[in-house]
Image (cartoon, rainbow, N blue to C red; front, side):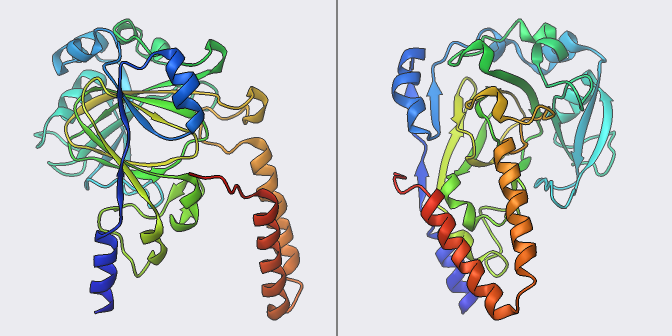
Length: 325
C-alpha cells in the first residue's frame, strides 16, 4: 500500500509548462527575460537555412566520411553515472543514417540500439566544441541568436539523437540556448533550488527515469517541481545555468547548443572544455567543506551530528537566498 501511495504521489507531482514566447528581440530578451533566470521557449526565431536543409541526405553529403565519436546504447535511457553505453567511432555519413533508423542491419550492441553524437573539439582536453571548426559546411547554414556579447561565447555543440533516446538529468554551469533544428524533444527541467531532492552525484542526478522514479530509493524526488516543454523544429529553449534538465528525443533530430559565460571569465575553470566544471570559487568551497567534515570525524557521533547541523544552519543563514519566486 505504501508503494502505491508513493506512486500516486509521484503521478500527482505538479508539472509547470515552460513559458513560450514568439518574436522575442535581443533587447527584450536582455531587459525582460534574461534577468528572471528561468527557462523559456523562444519561437519564430531566425535560424537560417538549417531548419529546412538539414535532411539525412544533406547532412551525409555535406559532412561526408569524417569520423565522429558517438555514444551507443542498447537501452533508450542513457545513464552517465552507470555508463550503460559504449563509445564507438563511425564515418559521419554512416552514423547519421544509422541514427535515423529504428532497426539496424549493422550494429554494435543490438539491432535497435540508440545513437547519440555530442560534438567535441579536435583535442578534447584542450579544444572546445565549435560547429564553425568541426563542421564548417553546416555552420554556414545556421544563424545563431546572438543574445549575448561575442566575448561571452564559450561553445557551440552539435548534437544528433536517435528517436526515443533519453539523456541523464544534469546541470551546466553556463547559460545556453538549445536550438532544435529538426525533430522533436521533450525537456523536463528542475530549479537549482530543488537540488536537495535530486540525489546528486557531481553535476548529475541519480534519478534517470523522471516519469517513473524509484521512490523507495529516491523518496524526496516528489518534492522537486518539474517544469516541462516540448520543442519542435525551429524552437529555441533558454536554459539558465544551474537548471537541471532531462531530455527525450521523441523523433530523430538534430540540435545545436550554444553556451555562453554568464559570470566574469575568470570565475570559470580554464581547463574546462565541456563547460560543466563548477566555478573555481565553488570548487574551492566544496574542498574546504570536505576538509571540515573530515575534521568532524574526530568527534564522537553525538557531537559530530550536533555540529554538522550547526554548520548546515550557518550555511543557510549566510548563503541561502530567500527571494526565489
